[in-house]
Length: 264
Ligand code: SAH
Image (cartoon, rainbow, N blue to C red; front, side, top):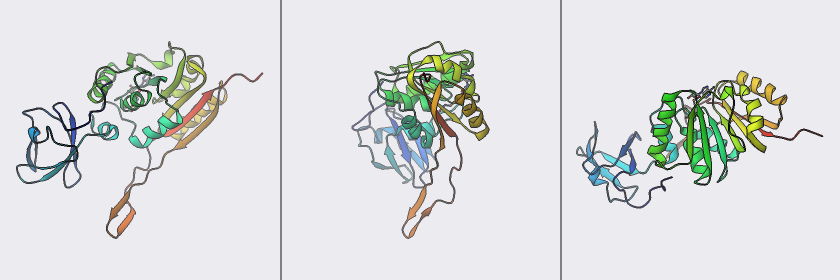
C-alpha cells in the first residue's frame, strides 16, 4: 500500500481544488499539466513544490484552494460503476464490523470499491480483503479505483464469482455484504467465518432487512442488530446557524450479527 503522501505537493499527487462556490475538482499533478475551467487556467507547476492548503489564482484571477483529497473526498469524486456506500455509512461500518489491523475480510459485491478502500486502510498491510464480484467490468473498475488511491501493492484479491454459490475461503474474521439477497449468504458465512466472526450487510430497504433477520434468527448467528445512520449537516454563517434545508434522508440500513457456538 502506498504511504499517504505528505509534505509539499509533488508530481503524481492527487489534488482537490475548491473554488469560491465550494465546487470540487480532482486533478493529478503533471509537470506540464493544466487545469481548465470557466474560471480560467491553472498550471500544475504552480502547485508542485507548494504546501498543502495553498490558495492559488487562475489566469482569470479566480481563487482556488488546493489540498490532498481525503479518502472520503476520493470516494465521492472517483469514477463509479455501481452505486457506492457513502462516507456517512463507511465509518460506522468499520466500527460495527470491528475491522481491525490484520483482519481477514471477505467483501461482496465489490462494486466501485468504496468500501474496499475503506477496509484496506483500516486493516493495513498485515490484513487481507478478498472480494467476490459477479461482474467482471465492476471488478476492473474497483481495482482501478483502489490502485488510484492506495497504489498497486495492496492486500486485495478480487474474484469474479457469484457469492450465492458458496464461499471457498475459511478462517475469515469478517464478511461484509452489499448485494440484494444477503440472506442467501448466511449458510455459507457460517462455515467461512471464525467463531465469534462478524457478518454485516448493508441494505437499502427494510423488507430486505426483515428477510435477512428471519434467516439470521434460524442460523448459528446471534447478537443481531439493525440500525440506520442519520447525518444532518448545518449551515453556519454569521448569525445564521441552523440545520441545512436539505439532507440525505436515506441511504441504507446496517445489519450485523456474530457467529456463535451452538448452546449445549
Ligand atoms: N459496496 C460497493 C458497492 C457495491 S454495489 C461500494 O462501496 O463501492 C453491489 C455490487 O454487488 C454490484 O457490483 C453487483 O454486481 C454485485 N453483486 C450483486 N449480486 C452479487 C452476487 N450474487 N455475487 C457477487 N457480487 C454480486
